[in-house]
Amino acid sequence: MRHHSGKANRTWLIILGILFLAAGVLAVLVASGTLARLIGGSPGRSDRVLSNGREFLAGEYTSWGMLLAGLILGILGLWWLLAQVPRARAAGTFRLQEDPAHGVTVCDPQVLAAAVGHETEQLPGVVNSSVRLRGTADEPDLAMKVTVNSDADVQGVIARIQQEVVPHLVSALEVPLNTFGLEIDASSKAGAPGGGATVSSRGTVVY
Amino acid sequence: MTAPSAAMHQPWDIEGRGETVLARKVLEKTASQVARDETFAGGSSGGFLGIGSRADLSARPDASVELAGNVASLKVTVGLPYPMPLRQATEQLRRRITERVTELTGVQVRQVDITVSWLKPPQRELRRRRKLQ
Figure 1: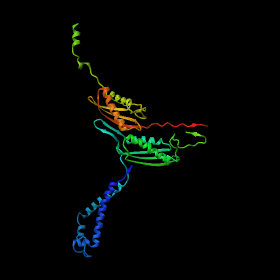
Figure 2: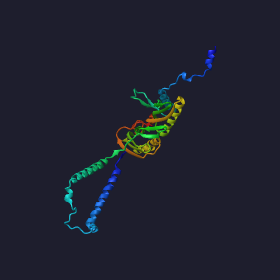
Figure 3: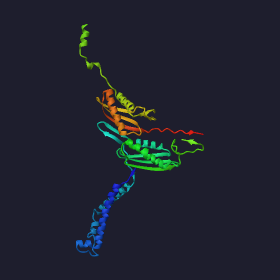
């Protein structure tokens, strides 16, 4: 289960939106002459926008200030860029019970994932499975990638995962899943032994 | 003849009769035996020095004890059948270990920390083919 930097994106987009909106409003006010009327008297074409620009730019600390500002903006930009890389949500140990007076109960999510994977691989037509359990014991996130063979009943596999495998995990954790993702892949390998999805015989074979 | 009768009437010197020491191992084995016999929990069996051991619901779970006077804190590492409500099963395990270890040894069990180290799904039997003709 991967998650993106949605909160940081929203925050920075709001900040940039406000800045650009303010700049746009200022440009409109300047272009329409409203700003000139507001501050009294319109500037001539030859008037400088920045009255003491040369002195400002020739200041002792101006170049260092500009460099520092550029550096900060660059670091912020780089941080934002790196934040866009999707990353897996951290999976800590599931704390099923936490009572300091009587003791705690913990279970590694990989233990549960292994049980889910084992149960999934017993389904007819399933070749392989990869299960990831993230989040917390109270809000678990389940992501599964199931590989089925070419003769498998895909709808049947999905139905059995939804009706058997997932409910078993829910009953083990005693809480509903926060999120559940399922990806089905196809393979040319043979399915699980005893699955019975594929019958290849010339005689009469009854299961 | 008077000396033995006088000695018999003296009060027992309890301090001089010796002391009973309960080894920590006894508590650990008692706890793991209770877990195996009276709950669904299992342990691991086989292997050498912990290598190659396999999950076994009929084996005793691992237990370690920290003793402070007559009060014990236990840490139990167990395996459970799957699917099973883990919170309920481990709460039952905790309660059972607390009650039985206290009852059997006289040591007051205050805390039982449980780690579920594996879950064992039911093994599906392979359907056998039956040839008619």
